[in-house]
Amino acid sequence: MYFEPKAPLYRDPIWDGAADPVVIWNREEKNWWMLYTNRRAAAINHGVSYIHGTRIGVASSGDGGRTWLYRGELDLEFEKGHNTFWAPEVIWAQGKYHMYVSYVRGIPQEWQGDRHILHYTADTLWDWKWEGVVPLSSERVIDACVCEVRPGEYKLWYKDEAHGSHTYSAVSRDLYHWSVLGPEIQRNPHEGPNVFSFAGKFWMLTDPWHGLDVYSSLDASQWEYRGNILRTPGIRPDDGSIGGHADVVVHQGHAYVFYFTHPQVTEEQRNQEDFVWEYQHRRSSIQVAELQEKDGNLICSRDHVLFSLDPV
Image (cartoon, rainbow, N blue to C red; front, side, top):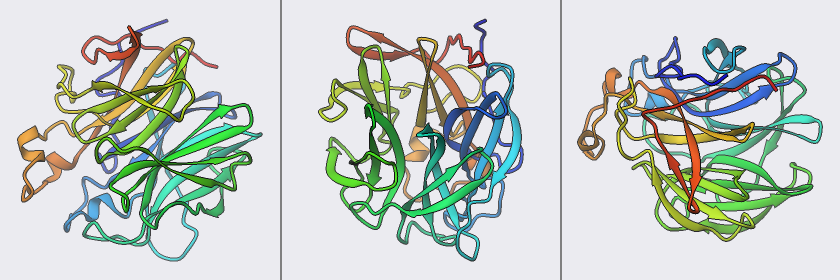
């Protein structure tokens, strides 16, 4: 049964900084899980320290997405110290869960340091085994997305900050060993590539920090720019700013985009280099809307949403 989702769909009850969501069906619990970057918006902040030192937050829904219950954080530490984990990508493939998550050592107060994508595997979504660092095109890579593009062939897209903050890609047949292909989206600097199959095509969303750019492809390699969504503010609670770093769940013929907003940040403030982000600006919320294909494009009405994640 379709319903109007809550707006916001979810706020983290501890740090109030939920961002970069990924949504997956939990086969063991028989419910939906949302895993997200748990930015420490409510923490004392020095520079951008609240964006670092983050763990991966977990919320679950057993009622088709109507309500989401905070379940805690994943402990992914594989070396000593308090480190930074961002933007999880989680898939079920080859009989296991696979996670590809961004990693920064420690808690930097500035945008600095190497960044890598780590690979974990699990039989349940709670208990993760570190498989190692994925060697890619530079030492500053984040925001993994993985999709099976042909039977038994997987493709990884990610942001390479050392190469113009463009989307690069790699391929694998076993999800452990990856061959880098090179740049794939170079239209503008951006982050958070997300690829999914819907309405007979592959689609990619990227986050250029002014809404989400949309691309389409027949082969998941050659991409055509198809416009922008979630740039115009919405009218629902906490939805009056641009949508950022999204995940798409295709479920029973519908495509739902899960994205985050900074509800109390204006476009003018966002563009001020010396703007000081206080708690009310740092906090973020998760929203959901439906994507529809029309005349070869994706459209998204964020103001009037019907939604349902019936059990799998």
